[in-house]
Length: 103
Image 1 (cartoon, rainbow, N blue to C red):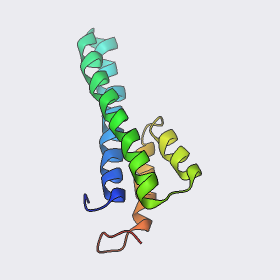
Image 2: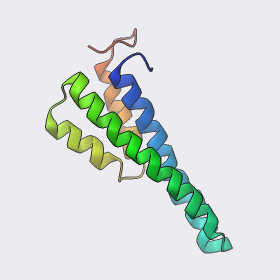
Image 3: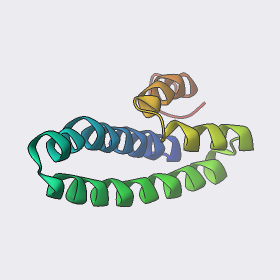
Image 4: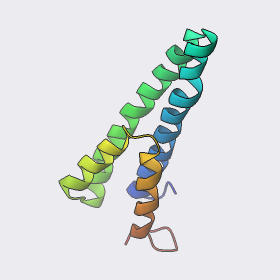
């Protein structure tokens, strides 16, 4: 999975999508239902750093894979939609051979 730019991007997308879901469905309820505001502070900070790394991975993949600009915009927008990165990842599997190398 880490052998090429597309694999690294897919990994960062899964990591970023997971951190968003943890923030929305675990940390936010802990804050508002159980008055544990530190959960959002910690998870939100981690999510922010992971999001920045995801943006760097998008830029790297855009240059290495030579994506069209509209695909780059779609990758950025998918980060703001819960489960968006997982849907994008399922569509990116089409670009790889069974051996894991990009087409």
